[in-house]
Length: 134
Image (cartoon, rainbow, N blue to C red; front, side):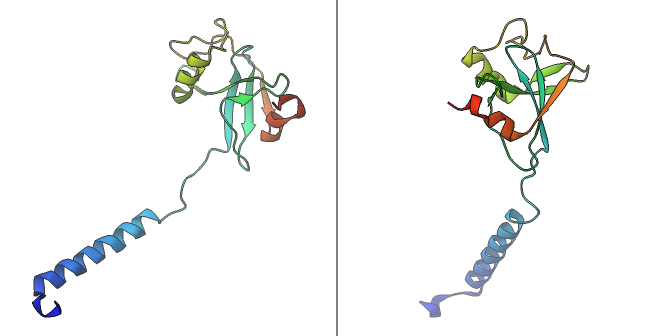
């Protein structure tokens, strides 16, 4: 078997090994995935806006409200005009859950109509309080 190897067989094998090594190096280079240090959430029933520090711990979406324990906190972002909108990746889940108050969130556009101007700061632990277990 080794006697039938031609020079181009060896060259092809070496080239394949080099491509594999480069592919592995490219895949594992850098610091990896970066996560946001904070997430903005809105209570889709009341319009209360929350800022959650996620620098040390992640949260589940939709998040539990710290007082009611209901999963009514959905991620939001500011549009160019300064309006809050539900993150597009969460809008479908919000619509199918049917928990949003129509005077707070437009289910078609995701625009948060009744957002409060005051932002309440929370930690991920606040979203896991005794009242919110269940």
